[in-house]
Length: 476
Image: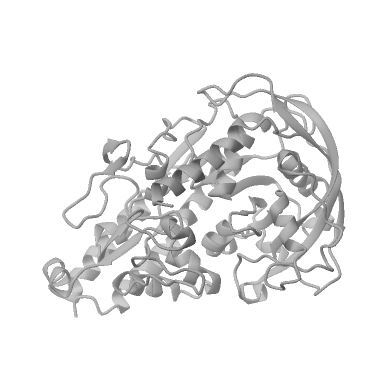
């Protein structure tokens, strides 16, 4: 299957999330809360939560504790009452109900005083056939620095089914034996009820921490689910205070009367595969960030992020990977070209910071320029003399570049078409751009300070990026 065919398959799957006649909620009237499930601490089996796509280090190293609860209740499925339209204002009605038992994984500060009052709830991604937390993987440094609680919810059936595997890397058949899921038509209400449980059962779920705000996050396949949730479910059941939709690949619009902040975060890959159809004007409650030099998933998420404890070394590793990229980031993937080593996770950190300030304090995030295109179907990006895309959110990776970074140009096994590409500059190219080390550091620091001043990098990441440039050998 060629890349475009695979893309069409992904987009059809995402569109199906929006067009499905099996939406779900708790049958409440507009503005109501969701039903609150029974919450019990998870026990048994190997004694630890299993999340196959997650950070690999002991959370105690970063001052966090991992725990897990089971959520049991009765969920509803919903059906559309009218054809899907082009404004995102969908209507749904309750259909059947079914019992369920799912799980939620919690990462919270050990020191209660570090909690900033905001819980981010991630719709766990199941594209790989098992639960994964890509937004925790990519953004955990910022979540930890700011004292968020992260909760990952197993909202979909395939994730629960995988948890019953006897393969210890994917599940724990004993621990998760009693989990049951009636099907993905009920996933939206299960997710609503998980959010309601965080408010109603904080002593059990959060170890006594009291949440003031709950923000939803979801990446890729999960982002497609969130678009459906925002358009059809949120107007009926007000559980969440804001949404960070990360790397949606479909073109369904997000309604303009959500009433809570929505920040959509898009990479080059996402804009390209969606043919730009997901673009909407910014409003007082909507922001679209498109980030130059980025791919749907990248080397940081696959290789550096799982081991990154926030000790400051990852910025140097990212910069080094731009100069010496690999096409074999893990044992599971061998791609045709070196994969993207770009700056997506740094800007995602800023997105976490900005969405929280928006929800908690009413401080609206900065407006971001769109990536520049010269064609729409297919999307053709305008590029500079170095081959990097013009427009969008700028970072030192594209404004003081050492490589051509792209969201496309990739092929190979499995999900490789989502990983973008990196073409490192030759020694001659680097010499022409940066005759000496001082020139490189000056250009990199200038670009970093610009991104920081515009609100697209947080202070801690900016400092690490500047330090990485100083410690590098570029220009020497």
